[in-house]
Amino acid sequence: MSEKIWSILIEALPKMLEYGLKVTIPLTLLSFSFALILSVLVALIQYANVPVLKQLCRVYIWVVRGTPLLVQLFLVFYGLPKIGILLPAYPTAVLVFGFNEGAYMAESLRGALEAVPKGQLEAGLCVRMSYIKIMWHIVLPQAFRTAFPALSNSLISMVKGTSLAATITVTEMFRQAQVINARVYQPLALYTECALIYLAFCSVLTVLQHLIEKRLNRYGGVKS
Amino acid sequence: MMLEINGIRKAFGKKEILKGIDLQVEKGDVVAILGPSGSGKTTFLRCLNFLEIADSGTLIFDGEHFDLHAAKRRDVARVRQKTAFVFQNYNLFLNKTVLQNVTLGLTSGGKMKKAEAREIAVRALERVGMGDRLDSYPNQLSGGQQQRVAIARGLASDPEIIYFDEPTSALDPELIGEVLGVMRQLAQEGMTMLVVTHEMDFARTVSNKVVFMEDGVIVETGSSREFFERPKTARSKEFIRSILEKSESPMERRTPLSKISKIEPETLN
Image (cartoon, rainbow over all chains, first blue to last red; front, top):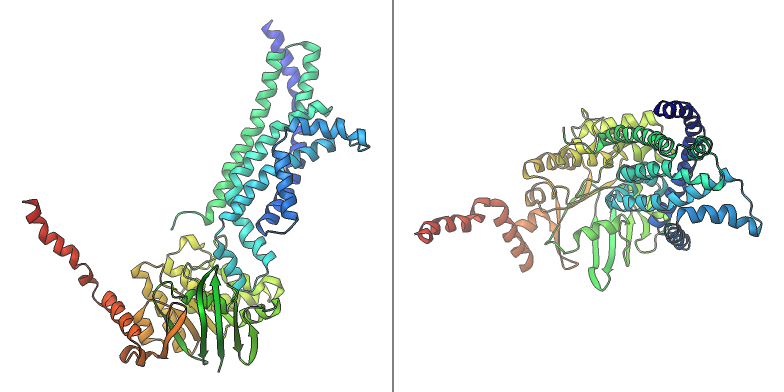
């Protein structure tokens, strides 16, 4: 009996891993990149106090943070076709995951931007750097350093969040586990295996986070 | 006249910080701006560089007229090109090395080639004795070293005047000397400087003019020798006395403590 389970698990591993590496990871990276760009824009608009756009950003964050991710997915994939907006499953997932996590990341970044001392901006103005250049070279890099742990959180949470894409017909790693389970019916063993692969992915990211933080610390380190 | 400042007014909310400041500065002048805290010295300096926008006031810089309240973007850039600003808290770019801190303003916006900027920056850093720490980050430096880098950053753009906003106030006492030393050297080389300071020794021996401010107005202005030897107003007399007492007899300031220790045995008995 247990030998049979082992052989099922061993057989399932490459199939799940394949979808993990081919779908889950790229889907995460695409969605995260989209979320990152969006969150930088949304945070900067608020930091720079751009009228109208700033209010729009607040509404965006309010709505996205106040509604469930699963409902957002269903709304876009099953709901929008009713008014003629029909998106394929994969792009829908990228869009919804990006917009969703982007709202949280924008708040992390906004807080980090506001924590950068005002004097950094003033010093830049005094040596005749443009506002954009000061933001790009001085303020944003420092804000990224501060927000880095929170942004890492978002990335890790997104890796696991992509499993929700299974509900809108994207065959990613979890969907693959369901498919295999439907054939052999070993839910305990197969979903444990699936969970362990997610854990492995997130462990790699945690180690990466630690290494990058070490490198970022070079200018925030102790006095020599 | 290099710099002619007329009628600067500035209020934060209902509180009037500057109530009409006029000042004339000649090339090579080292002007010490003295006065008790809250007298508007720092705000005055910040208005000159558009870090604060004055409610009114004009600036004539080398014959060019500028409106301190309604300056156009181009005018702001023009004024800042002629000036450098040294902050109380140094404000070095924390994510940049010493060298980058100085070159960034030179190269930004394609103003200058990298190699040329580097050369100028190294020269400026050597001038303040920081030529051996090019690749350090600000957090690896002492306050005195950071402030010297900040001065080099200002020098690199070849300004006609440098504004110093309490450049030594954030420093540990043993680090003040190295920064004042650099400023003294700049003064001797003929740099025009406007210095908000509490360092009476600097005001007396390095600056040639003194401006004494209180409650948003200039109470007295004159040569530094005159100011310290024959202060004209009662208020400045009092200020000089109180400052000199503080700076010249640090031990005496502690007398209350020694008195307490004398009393202590009795109270213990």
